[in-house]
Length: 115
Figure 1 (cartoon, rainbow, N blue to C red):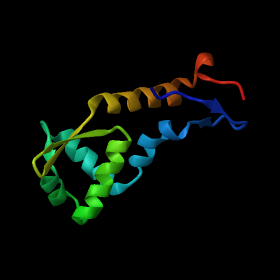
Figure 2: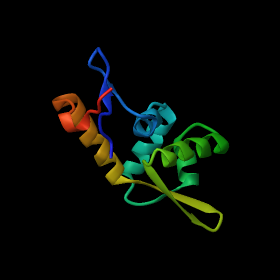
Figure 3: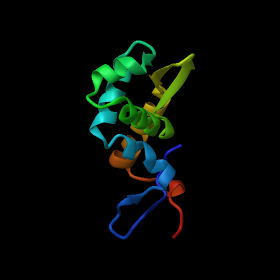
Figure 4: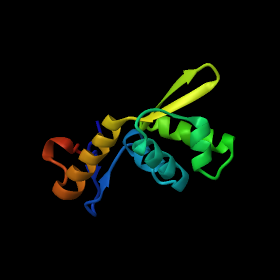
């Protein structure tokens, strides 16, 4: 689960690499388009359909899908040679909770560690 690790002297929250991974994944416009397309889809989306949505080649799309998978934001299912992707709603909900807690309320004492 995402949580604050510590705050530096400026009060800025620091996260470990694992916790920051979903935010880094969302920092690329291609991945953002892919994620939004998956979120709007009623179910799984094939890689060929995603290739029609973004303006990158298949190897580049595969890279971006791998980044989103490694960040825990999407899942992939293989069927023969085809790959189908879907968003992980629980991961998106976790990000939303993290942002709400961190930006609106700030970290709680039990979420902070001593330096």
